[in-house]
Amino acid sequence: MDPDFLDKLNLNLDASGIFLLAITVLAFLIPVVVILPPVGLQKSDALIQTHTLAGVDGSKSNLRKQSSDEHAPQAGKPPKVQSLVIYPVKSCKGIELTRSKVLPSGLQFDRLFTFAQLKSPFPVSVNSTDEEKSKHKWEFITQRQFSRLANVTVDLWLPDDMKLRKQSMKTKEAFLILRFPWKEDGWRGFFSTITAKLARGRSAEPEIEILLPVDFPSDVEIKENGYTFEEVKIWKDTITALNMQKELPGELQRYLGVSNKLGLFRIDPDRLREVYRCAPTKEEAGYQPVTGFQDAYPLHLMTLNSLQKFSSEVPKDENLKELDVLRFRPNIILSGAEPYDEETWKQIRFKPGNSGLYNDVVFNVSCRTVRCKMPNVDPATGVRHPSEPDKSLRAKRAVDEGAPLNGCLGMQLTPLFDPSLGEDREAWIAVGMTIEVEERGNHVYLKQ
Image (cartoon, rainbow, N blue to C red; front, side, top):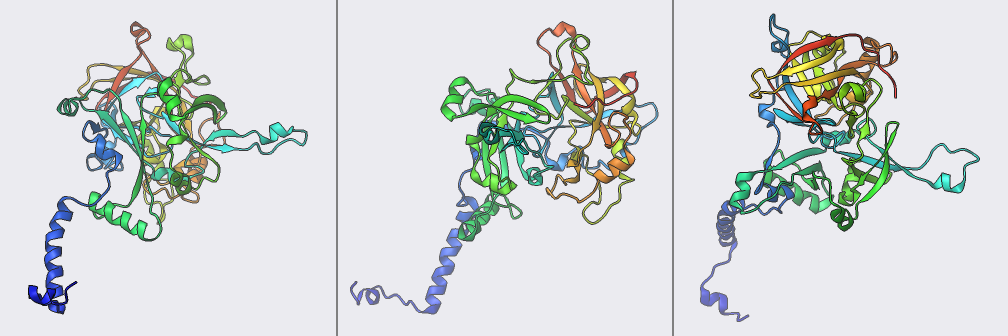
């Protein structure tokens, strides 16, 4: 460069000049960064153009005051539906709703997916063949083994007709987006933290998103995406489901702490699990009760007053100040019932109340919910308490002679439908519906 060039431009690049130049550039860039932050597009950024996020915003949750006295029984008033929750991916975060379609398998979109790990047979017999020793099997996983599943957020995106018209598009396809925290080491982690905060606010942390179709894939889609039908074990049942592990990033396995191969199974609507034991028979229900990846029965009901009663007997500490009803993963949460009165219900009818619906929906109350240690995991943090509430459940809620060593809290439900519906069995349930107890009786749990 010509040494006289700078002199000809008459530039003075001393320290004060450089400082003023930097201030000028920053003053220009800051508004640009605020308006157009330099962040990569997420999958949800595309869906927002055509779909609407389902569920109740946390600030408007009907469970914000779940420990309040306002849920106490009131003379002359029946219990009512306080909240509805679905869990599209087993053991991950739920989605609170104000209304939902009821299907034979449970609430619509509930427990469509489960994570599973590929396990080798152990122990094996001394006389086992090499083939038997090497045979691996998929087995579902929950927060009982991997508590960080509680930190996997699930968003349900439903097609929005108005948005679609604006985009001149047509679709009926819904999607799930799974999000989990993930921060790389070094400068990549620093950059992802900055971009997350620019995009979603100061409290935001970097995440990885996984996009999943809600509808069961077609044969063509299964082949194109490399999905496979495989057997997976859930409790004592072994079923054939669709393994969509191709959609999982390797970071998820490391985040959860799963050392075995990680799979993601979608329930096949043509191969639902048949429910027996305490459920009504095919003749009694008018159809064979079925379920997806729920533990045993189509739906789980809890009442806030029973939870409050039990919570008052659970010792609290720094890590357990109150029992959140979501620790117990119910689908239907009731207010205004006497504590533990639900344990005498055999058949209940939900009536419109102030829900805005005009239909009734009837459920067989099949049995008590026998609890495992999973409620020890805080659904807000994924942190497992070393003993509670499992210890108190076993000590104070071993109330079912069919499960004498286990605590019970909540009830399992099987939906009943009007025979006039034929094969089109569905109904609607909503917050504000009232409960009429049609039959009462004793419950005895039957083990699988």
